[in-house]
Image 1 (spheres, one colour):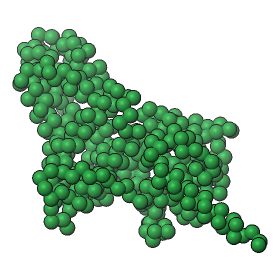
Image 2 (image 1 turned 90 degrees about the vertical axis):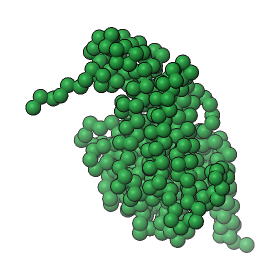
Image 3 (image 1 turned 90 degrees about the horizontal axis):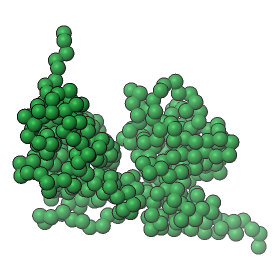
Image 4 (image 1 turned 135 degrees about the horizontal axis):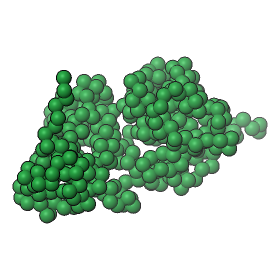
Length: 407
């Protein structure tokens, strides 16, 4: 059966979406759109009236909004813990916005030139994003035990504004310093929303009270627990072992691990370095973890995994279907590996504790807080709890050393 050819209108909308997203609205001409769509420029004006009329149609009819919705499977979301689901939402949303940065910046920057009709179309597009966000958050932020349920509609409106602001600010002003990096921004938003979920406001407005970070983000793990997790991961397979090795050997977050590409690993006899983040920073992969050596710079769990690959995928880690590993999958892998392992708290270790363990170990080995800030992308004030933990560990080790000395 012959494939049905798309209408001229749909081809113009798809072409405009492609050009607006890659080079912005201002830099795109109606001639370029018509040429890409394979139609006469007169057809464009007959259908939409102007370039801004075409933009309105893009906002309402193209895939610009459905992209976000297609990122999420409701059944999968409902199987996640609230913090996993929130991180998944922000990672996927910001990844999508990164691809649409030019379009978003152009829409915001040129909105004052639009007619009332076109401005209303942009408004409806934003309302659609808010509506989807409200539906998503309703799945994960509802608290049946609370007498004052969280107004997810208010949360969705604020989050939509934050996401648009992120796209505009990060896309036009990379040196803003409003947040240390994208991963930290996601963590701030997740913790804030979890705080709202556990203590919803009783009045008509959202509470913006400061969020107290989870203890697991600064609680390190003792060496026996670390080595047991690594041993368990080794038995689970080469990729599992490599991921846990990077967690403890480089102090990366689950979000950073999910974004790694094979080309991000640089190693030779003298060093093993990962290029991390959208604005890459260099992070060393340690040979030694908590007093035990896990190979060399050129032969360790990560290099073995990379050398064993027979596929052409660019991602450093892949899911069961051959797709790039996602943050929720990294977290699920950790949960599966640590279910039967107990941390000093009496609970299974949290994945955030791997990064805390690496940071504290680096500080104990002599790395300065300034140096750790450069390697992690965290501001020095965010490292204060970890510095205090390292000082406590150093004091304990010194006391034990003194106790072993004869009188």
